[in-house]
Length: 184
Image 1 (cartoon, rainbow, N blue to C red):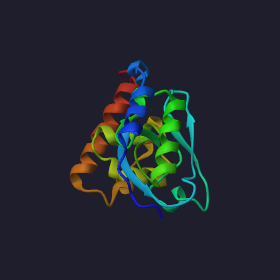
Image 2 (image 1 turned 135 degrees about the vertical axis):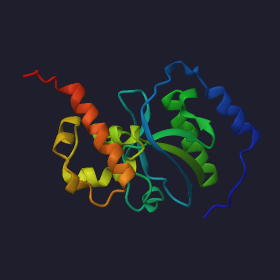
Image 3 (image 1 turned 180 degrees about the horizontal axis):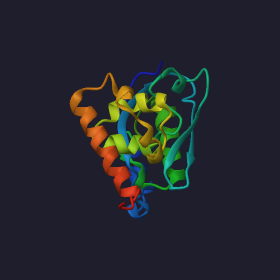
C-alpha cells in the first residue's frame, strides 16, 4: 500500500487550471449522499460515464480491484466531489484526469456520491419522510403512484402508527387528485 501523501501545490494549481464555469449545473432529487475514501494499491476499478444529464455516473465496478472491496459503492451512483473538488466545476474529461492523477500518485482518493431517486414510490416516501419503508413497498411490488391504491392496512403491519397515518393520508391525497369522482 502506498503511504498517504498530502496534495502538493503543483497538483492543486493544475486542478484549478482544469476548472470550468458551473453553467452546466444539473439538479436531481437526491436520496442520500455517501462519502467513500478509497485506499490501496492497484487499479481503482470504477468505470464512469457521462449520463444524459451530463453528470458523472458509476457505470461499473471491476472485480479484483480496490473499488470492488467497498460494498457501499453501487452502479448508478452520481459523483458530486473528488477530494473536495466539485464535479460541476469541471469538464468530464478533466475530472477523469484529476481522478487518475490522484489515484496514481497517492493511492488514496475520497469520492462524495449521491444515489438518485429510482421511482415514484421512492420519491413519494422521501417527500413524507418515510423513505426507510421503501423496501417494504418494493417487496409489495409498488413502483408507481398508481400502485399505491392497492396498499392496504395489512401491508403496513410493522410500521409505526405515525408513519402509517402519514402514508395512508398521503396515498388518499394522491388518489383524490388523480381520480375525479362523479357525484351520484
